[in-house]
Image (cartoon, rainbow, N blue to C red; front, top):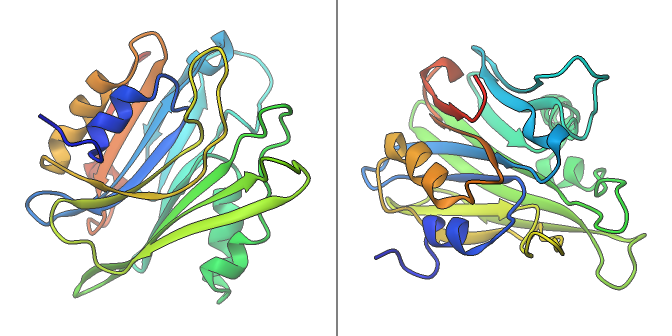
Length: 234
């Protein structure tokens, strides 16, 4: 049975986790990234994840106008790093880091989403890549202060080199379906399988009425095309 701090336990116990990302090392020591979408509204359900060589994109399946809170580049990579997150801020932070700005400094420019009264956190993950392996893992959330929504708290967790079976998770929500509660606080979690199994495992753990898409990919491959995706809608 999964432990209380395992990724799958958290996915199944949080009725509405919103969007979530994981960076970690699977049970075989393979460094990976994972991202999922859930949604309450019809518009949030009408999305899919599409892989390209250097990007992972959350696409709209309707003919409606683009919504930057729902449709965005969720991950980007090159030979030096991989970044993922839940909005258009991913490319903003990526551009800053590519220009030589530290991740922490770039992240401090990010605010939570402008969606009162929830004030959804913007979540981000970064891993550095080198011939010796993936390292410098960081997950972060830009979340509204519970008492003063005008203040953004910048919360981060750094694990330089996760051990096999160790990961770090951050989700946008932690409440139930009727009263979603903003989260955005990264935490360490246990990973109890190989990364290839995680897409199906996380998909099964998420609420069947809310889940939209899950993607996982090995960090050190040269392309996202080696990743595995499960979409509710083709």
